[in-house]
Image (tube, rainbow, N blue to C red; front, side):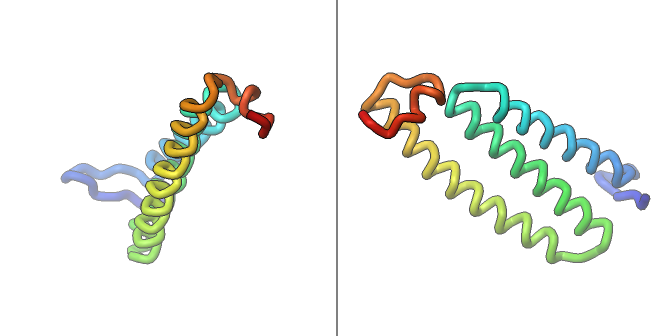
Length: 109
């Protein structure tokens, strides 16, 4: 594995990949275990950020800007997804007092 020069210190690439894997697993556990829709949305964002971290890590290791640009585009899409998801959740919470994802599985009001 190669090393990355961050802030004057040398860090091995595997540390960033390990951090990305830990963040992804935490996000996946949050989606699978928690029942609150807002926590599930935050966990999905955590998984997207973990994927972006690995993209930037590999782009930096390979000295290729395309991975960093793809991560930037992914962050833009994730921000739009968060806005739309939060708007839907606010509308659902205004019309119904549902705090559990199982209560939202029925489409009838």
